[in-house]
Amino acid sequence: MDAPRILLIEDEPGIADAILYALTRDGFAVEWKSTLREGLAAFDDSVDLVLMDVGLPDGSGFDGCREILRRRDVPVVFLTARAEEIDRIVGLEIGADDYVVKPFSPRELVARLRARLRARGARASLTGSVVTNPVRRGADAAPFPPPGACGFLVDAERARITYRTHELDLTRTEYGILTALLAKPGRVLSRARLMELAWDEDSPSLERTVDVHVKSLRAKLKAADPLVDPIETRRGLGYCLKESP
Image (tube, rainbow, N blue to C red; front, side, top):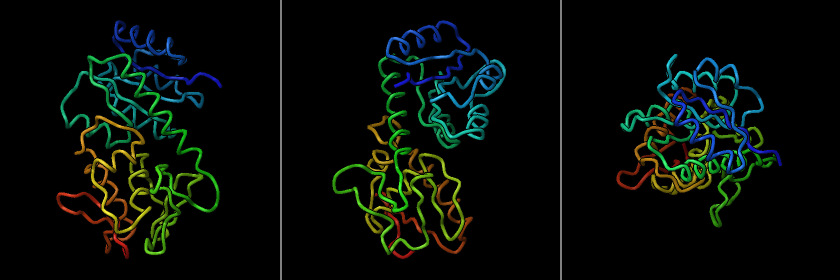
């Protein structure tokens, strides 16, 4: 199997050297660019994951993430000195997969990148015209959507969901949350459980980010059908998909 290719966009040479050493030692193939312009020019179909700083000398990593995801759906992990919750929420809301704050542990960084690649591989392996649940955990693995989850059509091979005949433009996390809810309509899933299912790993991300993703998901569902909100909030408990949305 070819080594996963990581595109690193980081303007601080000392940090870049430490990352290059940690990732290459762990079997990754890494290409380093020090500016946003060079990073976007180097991004192509061979890149498996983008690791980028938010504060680059010639632009914002947030803008770079939007441009990368416009070109191709690929995992993006931010690496930054910004520790404020709002920055993390903004990064995740625009489609990034994770957010690593400096200073960081090289071992933790490697583990997070591998987790992102595993999650992508698991979703990419979903095939077949009969849709099955991408959640791969015991009793949670069940065909879906059940008859009660009306209005939804899931194409697992393309990782697409259609609602009321409208194909939804979902981020990876929104797709994970919605498929988890679709698996068992009426069942309440806590924020921690949704993080476990949608992120496909144990994640230190704040549970507040689940609310951000659900808010964005609701807006996209409302655009398809303004009269119905199929996701129900159970205060203090979590979220569930209404059995007859």
